[in-house]
Image 1: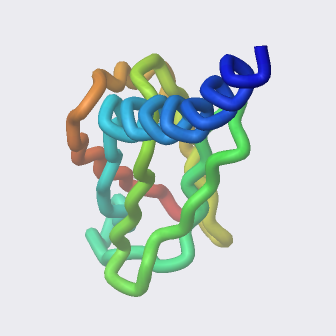
Image 2: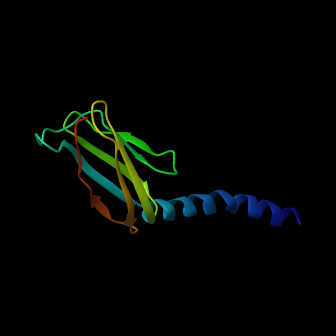
Length: 109
């Protein structure tokens, strides 16, 4: 009985590692840019949030953002920035193992 228990305890870390690797391989990436809808100027510091999750990222100085490790499913995005109207994009379908380019344009208040 002890041998079986030791064998199971020996194999457990390998099972966990193998399971985690599969999750990462099945995920996708969303990349994009945020621009001013009137001037087409790239916007830095814009918050991009996935509704119903704790996933938040911000655009960089060139207006670029990236959200890695998204599992397949439908996601809604909420885009916020000071002096701009909030924008919501609903039901974006994400498939596994893909890279998506989603650009957002914001309108000034």
